Length: 245
Image (cartoon, rainbow, N blue to C red; front, side):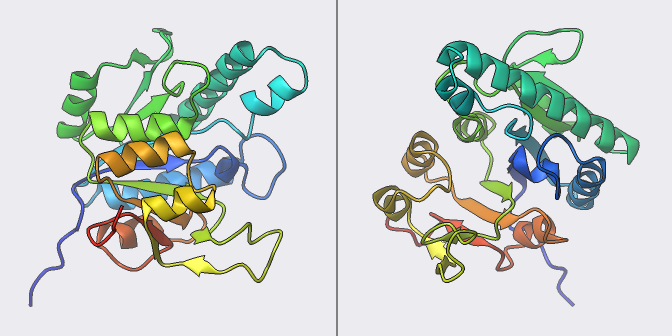
């Protein structure tokens, strides 16, 4: 009997800050972080190299804060610090279940995390450590979606797996419109032309230019990361081999 082989060997998982809230309205749900750690561990034990980019929207959103009067650059830096809080929480949960982890920050804070160095990040992955990239790109006006696309290119990941609170890409917000249609697969160009909020346009364009597929799925769907690793149908696939761009 032929043993099933993983489709991807090195992946970047993008976890939205909102997904870490669980059913709450704000902050970090301890049970959700622990659940996420076990989902990552299940894949890690298969020998898959895993990097993670984590958002900060559960704690602070730079764009929303700038609308309310905080200067945009300052607000974005505050948002980056929120991602560091989430990264440390996830690192703690992963270490507690026996997964060796390193946090690399785009903003230097040596007492808490390593500075981001691409070659060192790749070496950690090769040595069997999960690497969590925090503080976005380290620059204002760029989202953690763009950071995920950028880091995925830098470490030469096979795929971006975007774990959110929605189980795929829809024609419109399924929370606001229960009749919204779901895409099994969709091209990068269609995401851009329809203005779908899968990832921001900079991130989508980066992925399109480098032919990097994106799988969008619901973090609460138990075993979803493992299914995606083996190429099973899960969530929505953006791009991919058969995409026309």
